[in-house]
Image 1 (cartoon, rainbow, N blue to C red):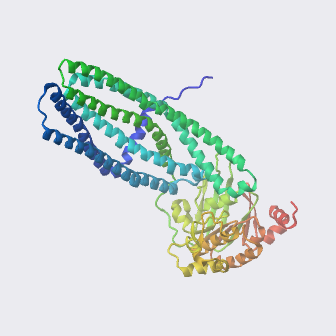
Image 2 (image 1 turned 120 degrees about the vertical axis):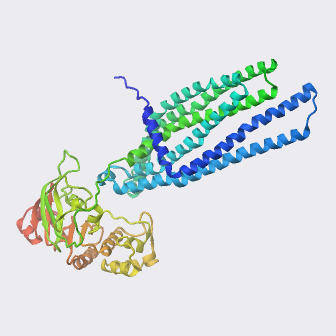
Image 3 (image 1 turned 90 degrees about the vertical axis):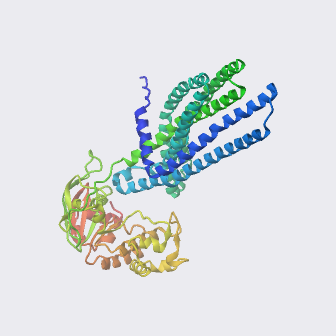
Length: 594
C-alpha cells in the first residue's frame, strides 16, 4: 500500500509562531528597542551607496570631463562614508546584544520556569509514564531552539522585512525601471523558500522526537550505571544508543539538507538579478539615462536588497526546526493538569481516623486493580499492609495521599472527604518514607531538614538521634555539614534510608506512611527503628507497607491485600492461627518453604 505523504500544516505552523510571539510579551520593550536600533542600522547602511555613488561620479567627471576635483568635499564624503559603515556595524552589534540578552535572560528563562511549575500540576500518572530524559529534552534543547526562533523572527525576519521595505522605496525613487527589474525576482525567491522550508518540517518533527529518546536513554544509562555494569550490558546499551542516535542523525540530516538548499537557491536567483541590473544599468548608462555613480549606487542597493532576502529565506528554513521544538514544548505546557480547587472541607485538627468507602481504582480502564475496598482505621493505630507483589499495597497509599484519585468511592480523614481538600492540604498531614530513597545534593543537615522548613540544627540532631543515625553522622568527616554528592555514593544504601526516615521524624506529621522503610537496613538497625517507631507513632496513625513480616508483627492491624481486595485482617497472632495467606507468607520467610 502506498504511503500517503504528510502535508505541510501551514496554519498550524502560523499558530505556533503567533504563540511564540505572544510569549515574548514580557520582553516586548526590549524587542521594540532592538527594532528601533535596527532601523538606525538600516538608514546608515542605505546612506552608504548614495555616498559611494557621489564619490564615483566625482572621479568619473574628473577623468572624463576634466572637471576640477574638490578635494575638501571628497575627503569629507570619505570620512562620512567611514562613519556610516562604523555606525551601521555598531548598531548591528548593539541589536544583537539586546536580542541575545533579552531572549536568553528572559524568554528562555521564563519558559523553563513555566515548565518547571507545570511539573507540580501534572498528574502523577503523566510523570510515571514519561521518561525523565524526555522532559529534560523539552526543557533544555527544545526551549533553546525556541529562543533561536525569537532571534529568527525579530532579528532576521523583521530586520529583513524592514530593510526590504526601506530599500524598495529608495530604489524606486532612484530609478523605477531598474527597481522593477530587481523586485520581479522577489516573489520567485519567497515562493521557492516557502516550498523548500515546508518539505523539511516532517524531518525536523521526527528529529526532535528522537532527540527526546536520546535524552531519555542517556538519563537511564546514568541512573542505572551500576546495574548496567553489573550485568555487563554496556555494549547492548551502546547499541541502543547508536540506533537512536542514528535515527536522530538521519532525520536531522534530511531536514538540514532540504532547509540548507534554500539560501543557495535564493542566492542564485539574486545573482540573476545582478546580471539583469548590470546589463540594464550598463545600457542606460551608455545611453546617458543614468550616471556611472548612479549605476554603482544601484548595484550596491541591489546587494543590500538581496541580503535580507537570503536572511529571510534562511530564517524560514530554520523556522521549521524551531516549530517542531515549539510544538513539543507547548504540547507539554498544554498537557493535562490535576483538578485543583480551594479546599471545601476542613481538616485543621487532624487526629488520624481514616476510612475507605467502596473505593475502586485502576491505572488502565481495562485492568481493574482495586474493587470495592472498605477500611476503617482508628486514630493512633499502626496498620500494616502486606501481600503479594502487584496486589495493590502501594496503590492504597497512593490513593490515600491523592497521588491518584479513586475512580469511584471516597476516602475520608476524620470524616472529611479528601477530594474536597487540595492535594497540598492532604499531604501536609502525612510523613512518608518511600522504598526508593531520594536524597538531594547538599549537606546531611539539608537533607534531614527537607522535612521541615526552617528547621534548626537542634531539631535536626534530635530527629537523627530518634532515628539512631546520630552516631554515624558524627563519624562523617564534617558531621552534619558533610556534603552528599549527586548520586549519594559517599554513604551506604542503609544510611540513605535512615536519613529519609529521620526526615520523616522531623516533619512530625499526624499520619505516617512507611513504604518498605526498613528494606535497606541491617537486622540490628531494623530492631532499633522498630523501638523508636513505637515512640514516634504513639497517638499517630501509621501505615506500614512491608515484605519483611518481622517488621510488622507488633502492628495493631495487619491487612493482607491480594488483587486489590483485603482478603485477611487481624493481628499477627490471629492471622498466623487462621492459617491463610499471611501464615503461608510468614512460613516461607522463616523456613524457606513456599
